[in-house]
Amino acid sequence: MLLLNRVALITGGAKGIGKGMALKFAEEGCSVAIADISVKDANETINEIEKIGREGLFVECNVTDSGQLSDMVKQVIEKFGKIDILVNNAGTLLHVADPNLKSIATIPENEWDKLLAINLKGTFLTSKAVVPFMKEKRYGKIINITSLGAVYPPAVAPHYNSAKAGVMGLTYDMACELGPFNITVNAIMPGLIRTSFYEPVLKTKTDEEKEEFFKERSKNIPLQRAGTAEDVACVALFLASELSAYVTAAILPVTGGLPFQPNF
Ligand code: NAP
Image (tube, rainbow, N blue to C red; front, side, top):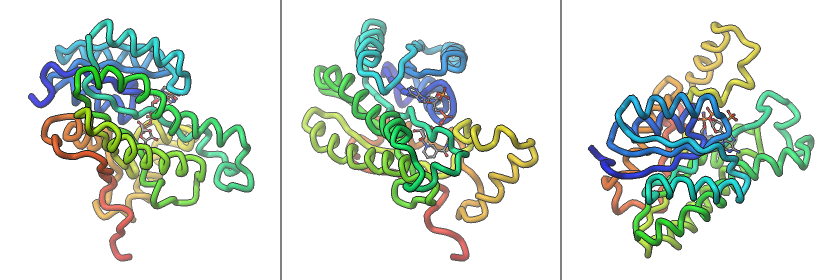
């Protein structure tokens, strides 16, 4: 097992990519804490972790709130005594279906602030709360989640793409600052991953139309399909384990080959 006796904290681990990572890590021997705002889904994920035979802990926590974060980290340390792995995964593209959010001309200032707070500031605040405990043990694996949109924006969400580009910059800085403490900091850059992330756009569509949505977008992907939470979790496992001992400041794309395209 690659993560035996390790402890991971995954923000946004209730569902989607975060849940995929939580279950993958548990299968590899890891105890998993989840910090999320989605209470029902988080409790279900904890049940699944326990069915695998590992310990789980859910703490309701909004990653934009430093007070909630410090209480949450305290609870994780009280239960497990350490945090070896931190995945800064909580993120969202609020109101993704709203056409006003596609242009800097129409994005309201408060939407910009909200998106930056969840996707970028949340990564900073969570890391700030966890890093002292990693430094104390002189061990840590931090995995940030950026997005292909950061470097190859499809011009649908300038605020989201800017936040995710910020996560890349933060990853490089944190890797340099924390390397001397034996803490690695890397990022995963997902492309099109089929999760509830797309619910706001798809909620009014039929099952057939939902299939069509992903099928249409898969045509430009070299591997010809949308990714799964499992696809991302496998790469996260590499970055969370000793297989990546000498890897830091890396941004790993999990995009099926995008932005390169077949028949371009
Ligand atoms: P998801 O299925 O929507 O899951 C995200 C989880 O984070 C949800 O449980 C969500 O709760 C929670 N969350 C949202 N805001 C939060 C906050 N302020 N504090 C704590 N938890 C919060 O999305 P996903 O597809 O798994 O995405 C995971 C990460 O991958 C995100 O950072 C996303 O930006 C990134 N990503 C995804 C894709 C993709 O194609 N899916 C592509 C590139 C990057 P609610 O559902 O209640 O809001």
